[in-house]
Amino acid sequence: MKNRVMILGSTGSIGTSALDVLAHLGSDWEVVGLAAGSNAKKLAEQANRCRPEAVALVEPGSETTFRSAIGYAPRVHIGPDALSQLVDSVDFDCAVCAVVGAAGVKATLRCVELGKRIALANKEALVVAGSILMPLARKSGATVIPVDSEHSAIFQALHAGRKEDVAKVHLTSSGGPFRTWSSEAMEEATAEDALRHPVWDMGPKITIDSATMMNKAMEIVEARWLFDLHPEQIDVILHPECIVHSLVEFRDGSMIAQLGSPDMRGPIQYALTYPQRKTSPASRVDLCAIRQLSFQRPDVERFPALRIGYDVARQGGTLGAVFNAANEAAVGLFRDGVIGFRDIARYVERVIRDHVRNDAPTLEDLLTADKWARHEVAKCTVC
Image 1 (cartoon, helix red, strand yellow):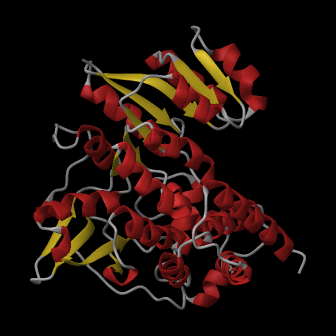
Image 2 (spheres, rainbow, N blue to C red):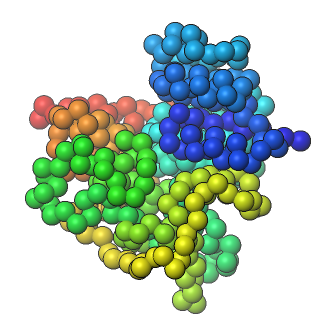
């Protein structure tokens, strides 16, 4: 029997890498669904190559471009509910959930509700709705395997011991393009500066999140829900070489690390094939060619996003939705040249401070909090 795979967010960097992995894995794997936001031309190219039975395109204005470029007749879902419609219309075994931002949360939750294997790259699903997603996975029998390189590393290293013996997990971070910049220099940073990541090749949103370290703040929240940890058990360390993807420290003092090249095809394939390990198209690490592996503490004064991440992980409730939405909105304003680089964290902190937290939210409560936070960020520009 073939493994039937759906990719939500197929035109982004993770989705593109996932298709590369599936082509490498061969004929036992079948792409049955693809979904994109607005990149209709690339979605059509992918669909013509893989021939999935159904596709989804969130932006209605892109439909004409897609239909003019598609060379066969898949089922096509168009509009804001297209992702969820695709999930319900296709029989699949595994979903690669790689939609950037809160836009992918509802469809990811639906995949979990159906009890499928989830290769989870959409960290926002856990940041926004971790309190709903993980209990739902336990109820439905869904298997949630992280694709983030850091959480994939932790997932793998945790197999070295018992959950109750874990003392800490250490999330590694490259430090982004501004790791050595002063606060004063960062005040003047442009979007072009922020998009020059020293190691990883990622989409623009996550690249800017790496520059602010908001991505690491979100990974703190993600680890809290994914591995059922207390925030105090989650540590962040800078590791510019990006070879050690994260570590698990056990109470006996042993530290188990997962090493690999900075190539997302490795964790993507692991999430698809777990518990099997197959030959991967990911590049290999030559240990003898590595001059050093360095580690250092991050500067929370220069990167206040980390402080925000710990606060959100501790408090929970609707705060995750507010945090994520405020950051998405602020990043958009930064990319448009409306606010400065360091204003991103300032806006997020201001909106979180003004939010009245709901400690036991429903999905509707989370979506309402998301909408409120975006509106509050917009208000900040005229304060």
